[in-house]
Amino acid sequence: MARRSSRTDLRAAGAGLLAVVLLVLLIGDARTAGKPSGPPNTLEVAWSYVATGRALDAYDVPPALSDEALAIPVGRSVLVVDTRSGRLLSTVNGFAEETPDLGLSGGVLFLVDTQDHFKDTLRAYDPATGRELWRRRAVPGPDGKGAGNFVGGGVLLADRGPVVVDGDRVLALEPRTGAVRWNVRLDTHCADPDPYVDVPYRMAETAARLLLLRHCPGETAELRAVDERDGRSVWRKRLGRGRDISVSAADGALGVRVDNEFRLLTEPGEEILRQAEFGYPVGEEQGVVYAGVGQELRAFRADTGKPAWNRARPLTGVAFMGDGLIVEDTSTDGSYSGDARWSVGDAAGQGPGASNLVALDGRRTASVPWPVAGTLLGASGELLVVRSEEAKGTRYTGLRPGHRAKDAARPVALGGSEPRHWPDACGLVDAGLLSELAPDYLRLPEKQSRTVRGVRLPHPSVCRFATESGDSGDDVFSVTVRWAAPDATAARTYAASAIPWGCAPPLGGCVTAEIEEPRSGVWLYTYRTGLEARPVAHATVVSGRYVLGVAAGEDVPAHRALVRRVALHLSERGGRRE
Image 1: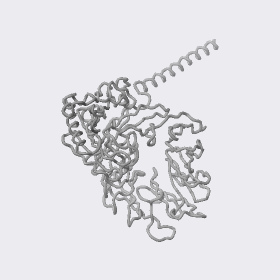
Image 2: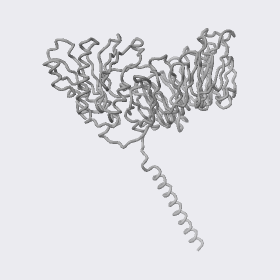
Image 3: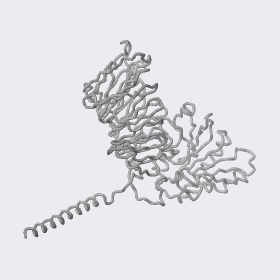
Image 4: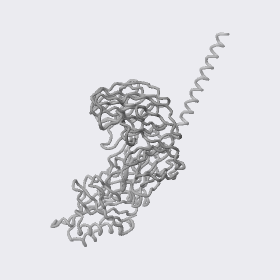
């Protein structure tokens, strides 16, 4: 009887355990039910803020971005915006010269101001009020004469607060008071010092480690990692000799460049990869280290160094991690890499900017469009922040990644628009206008324009118009469907950022675009193209939900008149197409 009772108890226990397991599985299913899988496939506008003054009209100092705030340099002021709401928090004024170097660290705004051509003053401000908290002067050079200088790696804005080089020491400062948290002595003596370098150190940081790279000409370079909390030395690594040696870091991942060789390391200092390629660390998450190597985005297991996956990446820009997601620049017409400089205005360019969104397991979406053309600044918490130029200022847009139901008829790459809604570019100019311009115009569709961002369209999106006689180049023009936006408001927002409002240094300095708006939603301007920055008559037209482009030959009176005539025609005719 006792044995029978034991068996009965075991069966009852087994049944109870099975019930618990089933309950856990059901709870897990309930928690994940309805949750989308894979990377996000939409970018929704969380907020939008327009700062006075255009970034392209000023000296090129990029804004600073953290998980809570965006600091925007405008002349001799800095605007601080709350990136959770898009609301202006404060304005900091009164710098000796325009556009001080700036950054955010430990919840505090830091500016390196210029006095007598030396960046010798580090100032700390409360982002919420704009009140100055403290300031610190840089230590003079080795000869003890003149002003100090915070440029050339002399200050690092780490997550826990600023770290500054102070003579032969590195000081970690408390962000709100400027008090020294800890200090580390540096070996600043070089047998053959570089006359242009005061201190032979460069710094980088992860969330947990400060990295100190010592490099003297002709000597073996050394990388040292110290604990960000107390300055305790954690490890050292000899890197060998080289002429050009640098260090970079992202959370949990380190990158070292020795001449033409890229080395990827884990935060504990273990080398994962050594390759003669351009490379940079992206970050670490859940035991996997991510890096951009050559034209690939690659993932490695941190414990073994073995590859987890690799994906081709865009030809331009870099990737970064934000809130459990890898974000890449794209090579689309409306995406511009770099801090503040780009060349916009090509009426043949199609679409706003976009980002590739990559899940940590390597799954990637098609490029997800932004609402504007511009530059991706980075991530702030879960949001991406994009900068774009407008007629009277610079727009900053916070974009929240999200998911929408997959629909083959509404491709992600077209922003959810159906391909059938893209009009035939050759049908946008009616026969009446063509006959007025010349009796023998031909419509010449560009075959490759039936594919936009990898999506096949039912009609060509670019069409050239030329007379059959071809006696003169003055009668040739083209019409491009630049974008089919979700609605008319979205079309105007994108178009306003696709005009060459500011300067274009790559095209020979500050180039005046001579923008004219003869009618609301119609912009006529000069776009400069080619190595010689040859001016070409262009126009961008908003017609309902469509953004259209017109281009014709050179910037001469006959071509400008032709572009104006066609642009006004598209504005009038297109508005009725909706």
